[in-house]
Amino acid sequence: MKNLRNLNKKRIDIDELQQYLNIIDYMKLTEVVTTLISDEVIMPIKSSKLNGKQPSLYNRYSIIDEKEDLSEYTQELSYGINIHLDKTYYIKNIDRYKEDRKFILSLSKFLDESINLLNTQVSANERSFQIWQREKFLNREGGKRILKNLNLSIEFLNIYDTTEPLSYYSYSKNSPQKILILENKDTFYSMRKHLIKGSNVIFGEEISTLIYGGGKNIYRTFEDFEVCAEPYLINKRNEILYLGDLDYEGIIIYEGLYKIFKDAFNIKPFIKGYASMIDKFANGNIILPNTKDGQNRNIGHVFTMEFNDVYRAIIMNILTSNKYIPQEILNISDF
Image (cartoon, rainbow, N blue to C red):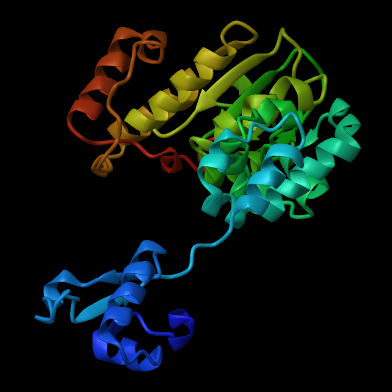
């Protein structure tokens, strides 16, 4: 019997079906239609209504796509994949396995042949290239999703994330010393220029190293501070100062840094720097900009408790008035 699927049609009416199969006898036609329905080759379109003959047939039928034999993939998952990989998800979702198959097989091959490489910790991109020959696959191209589907933890791969290199300038490498973290790039460059000119005194404080924080990026940059920084920078007797915009976000950035470093280092706001920002505003008849929309205003007391009553009151008045002082109010002539 001819294969209806060779017609490359989605639907067929009963007369066309009879003609295509070259069946003259109606009773024979009904038997064939019944068999095709049972074999899931066709399905009646009930809205087309019955043809009125006995026994009745529907006027139109849908041609059902042939089911793919997936046993090959099931067998591969069950017996051909490394034992460290949990196959449960993909056995239940064979279509997804077909999509991810080449990446799963690459991972399985790596674990079969090169699992000893996991004894050495490498970066995420380096491990990604080892396994898939695509350095961004793990972090950006679906690698983590596949690991989750295979119930394999990211820690199993023994990797570390690389952070942005620490941007800093040191006037001196002596220790202990005062280190100043600056939220914004312009102030970092201006103060660095000041130090390069030969003076490391800024607002009466001897500052030996400037570090560019880059706003909230400072958290990621400082994750590996004690591992990657030079010995003179991680001396526990150093004093770390922070200077940023005088707004909610700048204060929250400081409070986050304080939480990270308070047990390991002596960290404080750069009081003299903030005082200079406030004094310049107060004495210069400067109109402050409005606070940026959407800022998290849930600040604590870690920052403001470092100031005396006068400056604390001014800071709170500025914040509650929906104003802020950008760090850029200061320039090289002020230092």
